[in-house]
Length: 346
Image 1 (cartoon, rainbow, N blue to C red):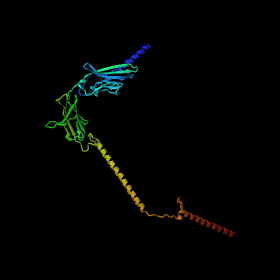
Image 2 (cartoon, rainbow, N blue to C red):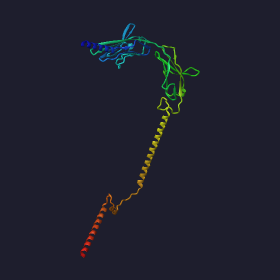
Image 3 (cartoon, one colour):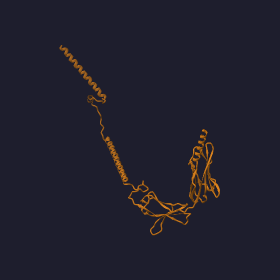
């Protein structure tokens, strides 16, 4: 019984991995002559399975040819007519879609995407998906005009653009015209975009574009006419920081003016302080040069009387010692005389 359960688990896991490795693609894809297209081929990567080979082949007129192959040695494009025109993503696991550029009518056919995976036990799983691809020449469609970010009402001095958009087989030629009263439109350019770096009031008016391609030789498609309005702005409304022409708000203008005023006051105060300190320093220097030089002399008597921390000169200290000696001598003399008188009386 256990062996049967184990076998069932293995079979379910194998079937689940095969389901995860199923390829997804499209049944039919249409391409535009001289354009480009992508033929989808994707799958969900599964752990334990490694893509070994990827092959794209094309069947046309009962003949099948390999046009792209990827294996361990790299990418290979055997057919010369597809070189430099086909590619498959390298950095997207699970994406094996074929991208084709510069489409030609002979590129039409049945394309098959085939992938072989190798499991951890070296067993191989092969899946493929087929897409029918047809390349056709398309007449250019009627163009439409798309305005830039600012729309069709643009402030003076701003940058503006009008884009002529059309679909069809490339190359597509474009021509821009401005409606001129009483005469044919004035030709302005032959690019898909009409650009003004600094719109002026004289640029206001009616505009339209015309397109054609090789498929519709002699057939010109013309867009509807659009009106471009240029709005006058007060002086200095377009700032240098605002290159696309958005006007400054009143709040922004007032804040800028206040900042400039505060900066001017600060500079004036600092300048005044510097001038004051310079004048003060010059005055002090002149005063120190004009002051007389005084000789400092010490009066010994005053120094002896004062009880200060001032250092007494040596001369004064000697005079004080002499005076103390004389005073002691006088005291001794007076004491002796008093003693003699007392003795005589007795």
